[in-house]
Image (cartoon, rainbow, N blue to C red):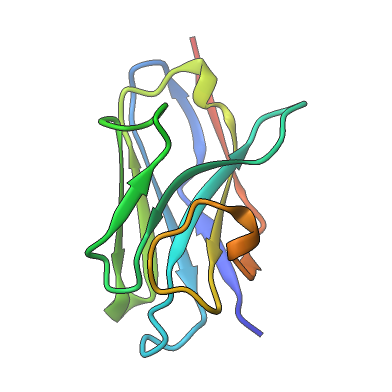
Length: 125
């Protein structure tokens, strides 16, 4: 069973930055697509960013383009989300996900088969 563990969440002031990490237990030879999603209180889970298995392809939600950067280090089985210029609307639990089928970046939750437990990001205004 694949296990994903997020880290790096916390409390930050508006305008600040955080870097999330997601470590997967999968073998590097798999190199399937991975993504970040988030869920704010009272809202549905929404797509944030995704990256292809090779790391060469990325997609972002419009709301985070230019501020967030997704990357991965397959040698370390780890995906990252660098978040800059944070604001209160970014407050949410952030989840990482990994596909068991797709190599290209995907933005639908149903395209992912494995999920982490989430890490809380709170942005104070």
